[in-house]
Length: 428
Ligand code: ADP
Ligand code: ASP
Ligand code: MG
Image 1 (cartoon, protein in one colour):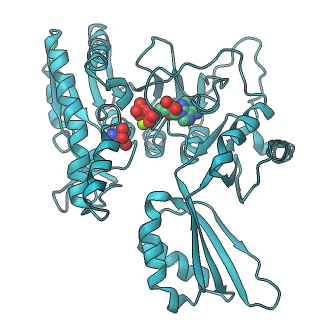
Image 2 (cartoon, protein in one colour; image 1 turned 90 degrees about the vertical axis):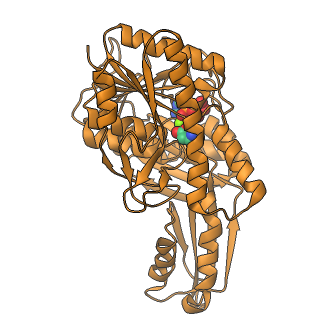
Image 3 (cartoon, rainbow, N blue to C red; image 1 turned 120 degrees about the vertical axis):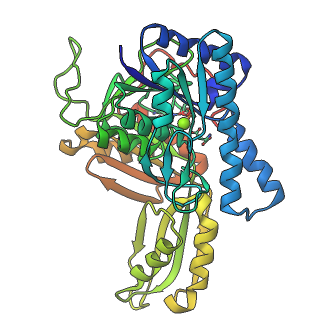
């Protein structure tokens, strides 16, 4: 008997049947004697549909109104889920993010959690209710406005509540059986991972693997919350993300004692590449460029500077960033063009990023060769490269990305015989 936080993603509650299925599952947990707090995402593709709708009215919506709009998706699912649970004879009450005490800063669209004060949620569970909380939203303390935490942010709501309430586990229910060695929609032969260190999960999430929101993994690691990623469509045991770096991974009989070199391949279609051409090759110019980008609050990922052609005194600086942030970054750079003294800017949305992740690659010299040879054999041209101790990432043409993922997955022997099940969702 304990306290369990369960988060259900949009594909798990995409229609009335899905909501009923999830309601029954929550009641089962409650009947096992646990207190249950549920975090729910908007139904199916609701958030994308709301974004499309706003896009038909304006390409420059006030950020405050955008958050007001998007937070409505989760209000629909939370109230419907509470109704279904009540209909099945259990008591449930739904709460918006602000009612549940999720206090954020004022950065609309990617608000960060400042404080979690879940007294109302606590009171509800103490009175025997199942508390249902709307994902990915909160309220800014400063402006009192409703904020959202960025796409996929309901995972982070769930972990933040689990930490604040001292839950025993945070279960992330989705449309696949856990974390796989690659996205099963792209690599059907991907292998399910039973346990993964938070270090590797962080790199996977940071590299664009959307199975878990990056900030959810960071938060879980920081507050020691055990995460269990599993399917709401099956009863299979999912993937445990071990919060404490000192936690031991359980080794099955017959398995090698040394950790596998590679844990998985992540890919990301959501980034764009920007190249600032003809930058004066003198100290301080990169600082000026990235100063402008920082002021625009954009998150830069890879950065490459090309050596200036002999004698030209100029250099090109390329970087990648989320596609959604290109517009205002390009505008900000354009405004600073004369001051920085660069010649022109190019940008390309048709790029993809592939990352190979594994804590075991630290001590394995052959990884880079196998990686680049596999890309070569698959006819994939590499545009940018970056590495960390446990990751190699490359930028490629967008239309080559899926082939590249499959080639790398096979080259590192990650394929299994049984095809992974994708239970629902549109993969949008
Ligand atoms: P939810 O709506 O439940 O939050 P998401 O669509 O955000 O679900 O995340 C689940 C999806 O993540 C899966 O359907 C799968 O396509 C994708 N995915 C990407 N990388 C992985 C991976 N390594 N393992 C499992 N799923 C992955
Ligand atoms: N509904 C939001 C989204 O689609 C938040 C989430 O699902 O986690 O991004
Ligand atoms: Mg998600």
